[in-house]
Length: 497
Image 1 (cartoon, helix red, strand yellow):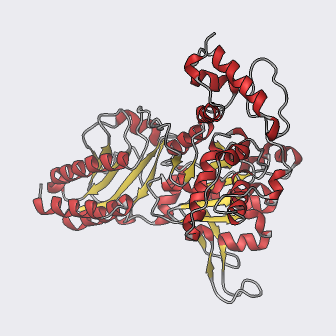
Image 2 (cartoon, helix red, strand yellow):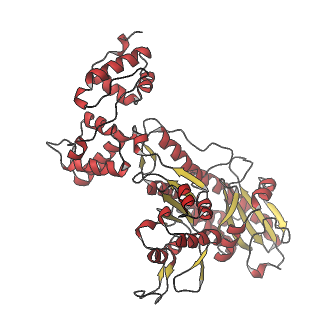
Image 3 (cartoon, helix red, strand yellow):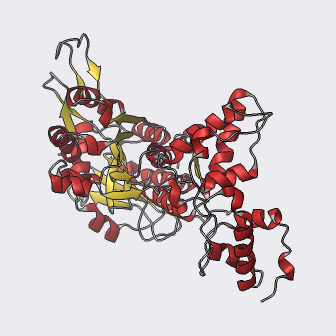
């Protein structure tokens, strides 16, 4: 193998953190160094078990998208016939039926297929493909593609690409409050959501994110994009509920100059701006039936026309959607298209409301306090009892409401301490503990101590002093139990059954 060529490839692959861009450059280099035509990288979508053309510098974008939309056979053929070594096929024996430039169709050639396999897995992460017209360079091309595939396999796994037959979900450390980049929490329900995010991130399947207002649906959409191989590509979001049909159509599809009053120049829409990346459609459940039909066409065909235009545009965009609407009920009412629902709901992601993950409230409160202190260059503290009070409130506005009220208490601080906003003082917290035997209802924080101490003592006694079991019986976290043990000065080791 040419040492100069290897050095050039290694230099490119090591110089840029954007893996996809680096591979694209390398494939273009091979066209100059070798008699290689139509090089491309296909990525295996583990969720729907298909390959998609990801990089093809010589291929027309429309042909690439058409193959991606219509491909239905590679999951069986490629999975059965992929081996660890490169496969060579005469030009008329291309079982993948990949598209190619017209000038190559009748030209003598050999098709080189190199699987990208991590540690001898049965299924490849991807496929490197190329047409070789100079038969004397076939062996050299095989060696180069093998080198490139080995590097790709290690890089893809290092960047979080799911590996077939390996459980890629890594156990979270209990003391780590951040489950995904930019998402704070440690509750089990949130960890389950994080595992799904990591699993589907590398897929191109559409994801429908459900959750109440304020649960952070856009944060999870961005996390899916950031954990994908295309995290350097655009992430474009639009709130569908905030715009009328005409404005939304112009916003998403763009418009030509003069297409309507005020259209003084041609403008690209969000679909074009997101080409190669991710488009996030928030509040998709609030769109009209007419607009839903236009979205369905883009999902099915990967094409559209700008407002006032006749040229058909082709895009390669991953669609993520979010809604707080019950879409099944909307279908029954006739306000949401059933065919669009099935197109969007390939992968469903349900974000739990804050009241169902109260263990996350103390972490979020401290996170917001640190954030506000950093922004305002202050050092405002918050009392443990205030955190406990906040943790036992219902939050109908979820994380967004919590953040706003923490900021209010931060700004209304007294002598350097967080002050509970007046709006919170009238709200009753949920009972802090529950046990198998009935406990007196706790209606006012000032009168909790006696009942709470008795419940904790009883739970500790029944668990023989094992705090983890006692916390589980009480329905509170271990940290909350330890706070109360310290608060009431309880000596756990002296408790006996």
